[in-house]
Length: 306
Image (tube, rainbow, N blue to C red; front, side):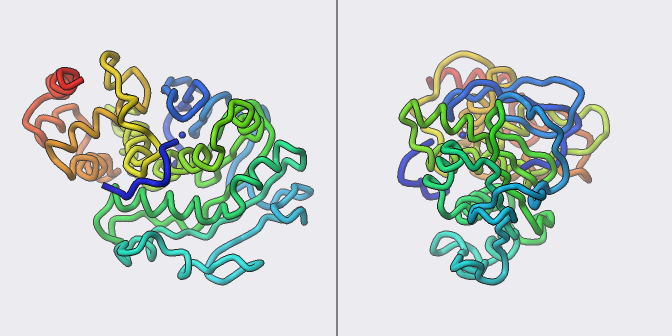
């Protein structure tokens, strides 16, 4: 178990299909699939194309208003701590900070009051991204040798109709969504931290190979939300009876994985290993191999506990 944050609260290697998570608010995310684009979207897709790292577009407004992205990495910039000074929680294995503290390129393109909502809530975006990366790595891996190289994450805050989108290792966060949540009285720092945990997990975790059958997308996004749950940004009291492990959204899947962890504390790590591109072609028999029962039987057992 990862240490919980002060209170509960929601970029990905490019997947084979376009994933949409509909519904606003950390507690109501659900998954749906559509074709025609790669990447992960929370809410509606961006109305304009984005790709690559995205940070550093000419004319965009940076955190300091200079029009250039703020890059925080191995040395102090503008008074921010160095990577070494920002290593995670006390007692964290040294390999986590070494392998899971990418350089962060950050730019806030929204110069309106909406953009200021992010700045006010998150004056230290590097810390939230690094916390998310460290938490994801502690769940997903057991040593630095297992972690894929992620030298840089780009964070682009901007005004568009959606929640968040990641292409490659570039995360786009919607200030329009932040305004909606602010009007609802949501703690924006907690909400943003939850979003970062979900999406940063998707950068680091394994997503299988291109072989058929492809690994189930419900499991991939469910693992990402399990990282968010373990970090304290989902509340176990929100578990509800009914639904399905593969069709009721990533939060439902995360709660199911949490139940499976009572049977095998390493189950999410083991599932992530089975999603490596070099692993055997995915089959649902993985659950029987790891836990002694098929996934439907395990789901029925979980439902009986609610």
